[in-house]
Image 1: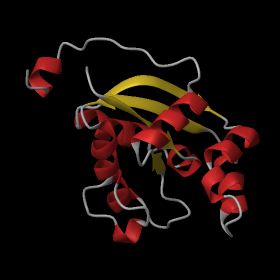
Image 2: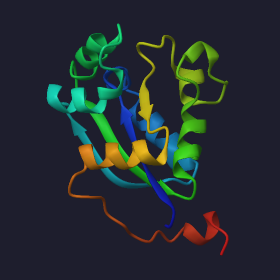
Image 3: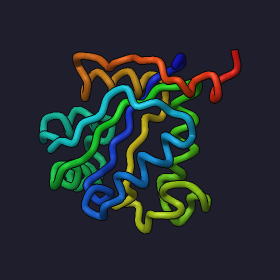
Length: 151
């Protein structure tokens, strides 16, 4: 599949609540292709680098403490407009403001436990993908691609 790549993290609350399959299923049903995936305990060092833009904000320490508290699923997704498609599927950061039909709108309750992270721009996606998948991602052709994409 051609297109851009983006990073998604199913946060500890998504893993603990048993929503990994539901969340991945929604992203795959949109037509996005998984090109890397791992269940992992995110290290404090990686979490601090990932959330570096929030350092110094009142919620930073809690954010880092939370993401390292339990395993998360880290994915790289690929597809045309993958960043925008993923973000629209995920929904607004605050679940109460997320549209019904989105992951956060249907499954989330509070901003501190909003299930999922998704890169918000091409620059963020490149930085985050390099942080979590330094060896890169894989590519492969799916037989379904002609049914998803126009030539």
